Structures are given as structure tokens and as C-alpha cells.
Length: 334
Ligand SMILES: [Zn+2]
Image (cartoon, rainbow, N blue to C red):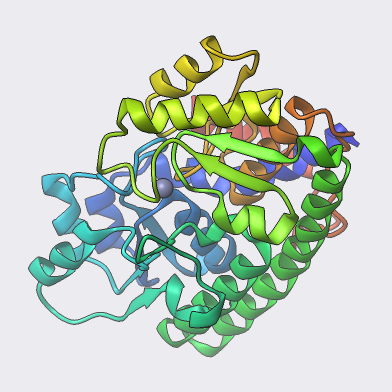
């Protein structure tokens, strides 16, 4: 079961590694497939899953970067300028992207994940909309459908059919993942279903899967937390007897470690919140990231962890065993 999952994640990760090794400027000029630029690593993975060989996916943000405070590099504007479309989260996550698109000149479609979602389904905190929609897999399915509709006009009819077929297969995986997450959270004893993190990235997760969510910082990491915020969380941990508090990969762990030191809670994690994680953790794809997080939460809070089983081969031909593809992947990553 474990092997099956690892092999499948390897397939998902392969495309990502192939891109990393390439020179971006060369990619832009050489090929006649459309170049699609993405902001977050979650969207980068999504476009790669959907677009496959039929688009060149170029992610702006490196693994582990914090999208709230990302500072565009000089080359980013050039990458956008050479692109045929941009895919971004929206919902005020990447304020820096607007000026990047403006400065790139020319005109290109901008596909905004947030546009896929009904306004009534969005959460807000202190008047600000919560951009962390990827943590509700059901909402991410809507985003995937919306991004598919945005990619199709960029390619010819045959490629469009392939993109739609990839979407159908991927949607099935996401539907399975959604149910799996729900089951994992249900396995945590109800008194322990509280997820305490550095910043408020898990609101959609909590609402979708029935777990209370509390954070030291608000929706964005832009403002620093005060010692008052930390004291409030310490009090909450003591009151609820939470067995664990969770560090996040894209946020400095100092404050959450302080909470752990001053209570009986374990400092667990890191959770991958606003970026995918490393391949070594199997968190370098969206599905892998959700899987790694849910495993960490389930185990740290005393649930009954069971690995997610993928029931589809995601379009990999049956006569081309996944194992044979793996060595190639390792070479690219070396
Ligand atoms: Zn965030």
C-alpha cells in the first residue's frame, strides 16, 4: 500500500523535476506549446497535472517561500513577459503579482483560482478574505475545473481533449482524497480535534473536516505576532489540553515552539501550509502535501492514521510500469 502511494507520487513529481533543471529563458523561446506562469507551488503543481506536456509550466515561487510576503526577483517580470497566461490564487494572497503582470507589458489571460469559488463559500477574518482555499480539497476541485477551462483556449483541439482527460482523472483522485481526509479527522477522538498553528492557514480545512482551528497570527504573516497573541494561545492550549501544536514550513517556528515549551503540548510538524514541501517528505505535489499534513495531524492528535490509496493510474499507460519511470526521475533531480 505504501509502495503504491510512493510510486504514484513519484509520477506526479517527475514533471516538476524535469522543469526545475531547465533554463527558463530557453523554455520560453524554443517551444510552441503555451507558457503558463504560476504563483504558488500548489498552483504550479495543479497546472502541471492538468497541462502535462501540452503546456510549459513555470512556477515563480520556490518551495518553502511565503506567498504573503514574497519579494519578486528581477527575473520574475521577464518570465511573466514571456508567458501566454498567468495562473494565480487571488483572494489577496499575492498582492505582488498585480504589479508584476502590469510591468510585464502585453496582454495575457490571468486565471484566478478564487474566481472559481462562490463568494458565500469564502471565509473571512477581521474583514479580510481568507485566501487559503487549497486546504478544502472540495474547493480545490472547483479550482481545478476553473483552471482547466482557462488552459483549454490556449491549445489546439487535440491538446484540449488531453487536458480535459487529465482533469477528469485528477478530479477522481481529488474526490477520493477529500473523503480520505474526512475519515482521518473523524478518527481523532473528538475532544482532541483542535489544530493550533503559527498562522491562520487552516480555516477552510477546519470547516470542511470538522476540526477546530486556532493560530497565533492571523490570515497573513505580514504582521508580527505580539506576546499577547502568544499568551492567548498558551492559555488555550492549557484549557483544551491540546496534545500538540504545529509548526509550519513557511513560517518561523519560534513562537509555536515557545507555546510548546510553556505547556505540555508537543511541537509537531512542520505542516506544509502556504507552499508544497520537499520530495523527501513526499510533499512535493498537492496531493502529497495534503497527505503529509493530514498524516501529521492525525498521528499527533491521537487519530488512527491509514495511508491514502489512489485508485486511478492518472493516465499512465498500463504497459509502461511506473517503476521504470522512477530512475529517470532520480536522474533529473540529481
Ligand atoms: Zn498563509
